[in-house]
Length: 413
Image (cartoon, rainbow, N blue to C red; front, side, top):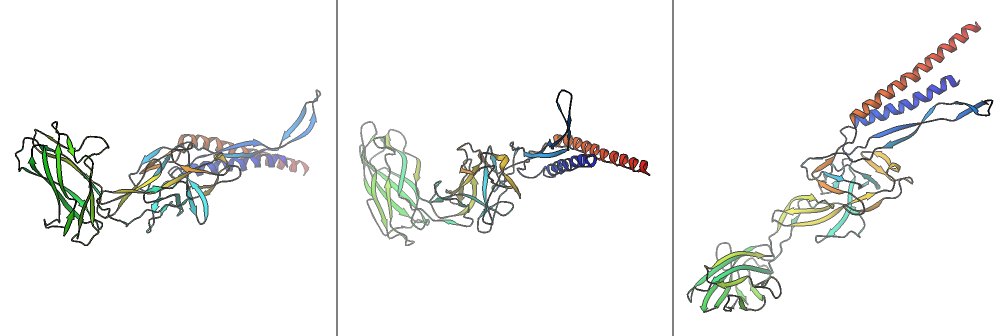
């Protein structure tokens, strides 16, 4: 009987609405959860006649759920201070490999496996672009992001040194001015390179470079190209050498490392001024720099706003090990939820467009932060009251029709 079937459709639709509201409220604290909203539409109609003017007389068959739409507005971003937490500020989804299937999520509550794999809370591998020698290849196929936890960075031998110094033009002949800088060999052992300036004549200084161990003993058995002469013009500018000093070589290092070959960068830019000057002022050794470093152990990592991942070592060095990829779809409402804060694409959503954060309309990333649920409690409670009243009204209709049926049966008896 239509008297019963019509309110039954209302009860079924209202049950769906109540379940959806309950699901929203239960996910108030779920990371990056997106609230859902239920919409109804009427069912088909039966024409039982016409009016005198020919207008149709129709009776409806009830209601149905026409859609359950997802609210994809941005949730608030809260700082957690945890390096494995990453929030998307703007459009996009992290790409996840889960048991061989590609899924998408905005939940950046990641963790590290014992092998350094970056995974989601549901165990999926976070996908991105690989890096080779600190250079990310965004044209390469996506692969799981792996953080080199426990890795040791190989040492880098010093190949160039530079020093900013002034030699006192008023100093007496025979004045000795030393300057020191730490350098590293191919095994990461550090040495003290001492540049000793000795005034030999007006506007003329000789130099000699020696290499010593931490205990002050000689670090090399022989050296070449480590001595020379500096001459200055009347204004204190370096005349010779007119270019950087190359071919400074120390061999027979005490730790058995490869020969240490250095270039002394007297001129930071071609045609520019030298870092060594001579004016009537106290000799000063201002700054020094070199490009070598010792080996280093993994210390921490950070996800940058563009998704690139920087790994820091305890030797003060850092390098890129990969870049997190983001995906967007043409129709977000077409995505299918599969649980665990994950989505999959469908024909309705279209295929995912994959790229990097901050490009192609994709949002940027915030390390040490998480996107919160966008559930509005006030709205949900209001919708809950409306759904409850609608359910009660449909229940009342059924009990009323039941009473009418009982009265009809009683009339027959």
